[in-house]
Every structure is written in structure tokens, then in C-alpha cells.
Amino acid sequence: MAPATPRESGPASLNDLTSQALHLLTTFSTALSPMSTTTSSASLPADPPNPLHVLRDSAKLLKAQTTKLSLLILNKPFTPSAIEKVLREVTGMCIPAMMSAVEITEMQAERWGRVMVGEVRARVRCVVTEIRVMVEEVGTVARADAQNKRAKVDGDVNVNGKKGSGTGASRDSLASTGVVWQTCDALIELEALGIAGVVVQKAEQYRETLRDAIEELKEWAEEGEGESEDEFAESDEGSADGNGVEEFFDTAKKLPKDRKDLRMLLDKALDKLKKISVLYQALIKRRLKTFAAGGESVMDTRNLDDLMDILKALPEIVDELANAFYELDEPDARDLLSKCCKSSKQAAELVRLSWDEREDEFTPWSKRFQPYRHNADESSSLKKSIADETDSRHQDGARYNAITAITPTAANPMLSSFSTPPLDAVAVRVAMLDALLAPLLVVVAVIDAFAALDAVVA
Picture (cartoon, rainbow, N blue to C red):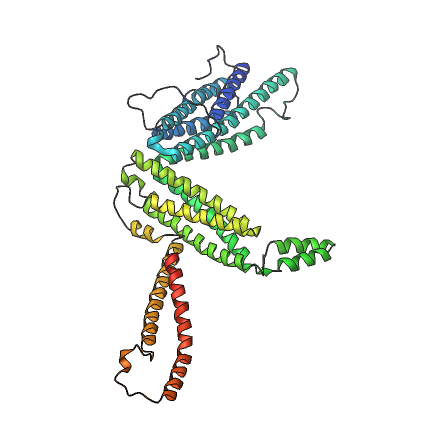
């Protein structure tokens, strides 16, 4: 609600108006803060206007009013009545229209999504903050002008040592006007960007943050190996001067050369993080930029919000992963790497199909993107190799049993067609054959034991 119009225009009424305007702007700024939980009980009209159009029009009007206000502050003579008129337009029309647009987006959150609602709140809050700074400067100039007029009546110089308004206030007014214009341009941009443009900007910011974390971790890996942990402890005990402290911090930044397991995990993590960075690029191109083509349904907006939550959380997880490596904490690093892989897989599966529920170029690519799929592949390959080895052992056992079946014994009918050699010669041959078959029988027993173990495991 706009401040009440005073009966007379002058320095005193302008001071009252600026005080009321500052109180109103402070209330708006508090309501727009991220920690605010204020909810509106008002209901939307039957056909509410497009909030982005409201923001665009009110931002353009605000730019014109702030330009006019800046000129009134710079030009002489200082005219409180003209400034009051502009302030009423700003606090009674422009800012309330922006607040109404914020309320519309919040009440239509299922249509606009959490990302757009948050972006509208943040950008309108920037406008309100900068307008509040400009109104404070108007109050400062008004008070300085009143003091100058009193000093002129008394025959003294003004508060700045010269007649008219102060040059310092003029410079502040010009700077504030430029900042207000920037914040208004950001609001006007929302109408051109739409939901797709905003989420693309956010995703690119998240991707840059992710790439910075990956590059930092890569540089740490390429710094070279430091001393082993035992060698570092011995060198630390033996150094008590300033150089020892510097060596402590230099060595703490390096990977100990005896941590081969951590080195392997680090190489594995860098490879997976590169794939995740590629996933960001693919999602931006194939899903975020094409969001408007899907009709922006409620379900699409929800999926988009969930996707953006994952893309926002991944750089934070990667930062924690990098810290775990810096602390040489392998279990924590392994858990965080698994968390990164699972989150990236969820992001790919969430939008596997296009916004119109069709397969496209991204669909088969997302199937191949399995950050931790290799674990299942390795398990399947291991099971297959065990099964093949088991079958081979069973076949070898059958062959060995066939060999033992032709051992010369009295019960073997295959020996009936042969002439019977002398008894001593037979005994010698049987002894030699038993000696040859003994190792084979041991092998057969071992193979049977392995086969039984494989059957238990299976």
C-alpha cells in the first residue's frame, strides 16, 4: 500500500515520505528473504496475468522513474514536491506490482516450478534492496538541502561548504541509478528466458562449479607423491623449527607414496567425475534447452525440479569427496564417490525420455551411462568364469575316470582277449601302472572336492 499523501509538499513532508517508504521497502525485503516462511491467504483471480509480463512492465517503468528521480536530485533548485511524486510512483505502483508477480508465481508453483519461483523472489529482492538504498540517499539529500536553506537564512555556508546540494550525494545517486537499472534488466530478462532459460543458466553454473572441483582435485593428484606416512611422522618428530612447519603443510597437501589404494581410488574417481561432467553437458543440450517443447506440464515441471535438485547437489558432494581425498580418508572417499555415481544415474534415468514421452538421441546414451555399472559386469563375468571352470573340471574328472576304468584287474573283460603273461611280469607291470595312476587319482579327488564346493556356493 502506498504511503499516504501529505497535505503540503516540502522538506518536512519529503522526510516523512522517505521514512514511510523505507519502512515499506524493509517489510518487502524481509518477506522476500530466503528464510521467510510468510504465506499469503489471498486467492488468485479467475484469469491472472502472466507474472513474467508483470515483472517486465513494472521493471521498465521503474527504470524510467529512477532516472527521473536521479535527475531531480542532480538538478537545481532542489524540488521536494517533484521528488515526492516520483517516490509515490515507485513505492505505490512499481514495487507493489513486482510483489504481486512474486505472489502469483508462488501460488502457481506447480506451473512455474521451484527454480523459477526462487529466481523471481531473488531478483525482485535485489530490486527492492537497491531501491531502498536510493530512497535513503534521497532522504540524505533532502536533509542536507533543508540544512542549507537554514544556513542561508543565517548567512552561513552549507553543510558541504558551497551552495546547493552536495556533489557526494550526486555521485551516489548516479551510482545507485546504475545498479537499479542492472537489477531491473535482470527482471526483464526473465520474460525472455522463460523456465528453460533459467534452468539452463543454473545448470551451467553448477557445471562450472563441478569442473572447478574436478580440476582442483586433478591438480592435487598431479602434484606428485609425498613421503610415506611413517616417513612423514619420523621427519615431523625430528623437525622443530619453522622449516618443519612449512614442510608439514607442503607434505599434507600431497598423496603419500605408500597409499597405493588411495591412488587407485583417486584415478577411478577422476574418470567417473569426467563422465558426470559430460552428463551435465548432455542434459543441458538434450533436456533443459528443450523443456518448453514439452508443453511445460505439471509432471514435467516436477521432474525438472527434481533434476535441478540433483544437479545442484552433485557439486557439493564432489567438494566433500575432494576434502575426503585431501584428508586421506579412503572409506569416506569411497562412500562419497558411490553417492556421486548413484546421483548421476538418477539424473540420467529421471529424464531418459523426452518431454513428450518419446525416445530420442539421449535415451540410448543414458542407458550406456552407468557410472557404477562395471560392478555388475565384473560380477557377471566372474560368475561365468567360475561356471566355465566348474564345467571344465567336471569334464576332466570324467576323462580321468575313463582312464582308471581300463586298469588291469581280474574283473575287467577287456583283458580277456590278451594272452596271459608270466605272473612276475604281470606283477611288475601292475606295480608300474599303479605308480603312474596314483598322482592322477589325487588330482581327481581334488577336482571332485572343488566341484562339490562350487555346488555349495552356487
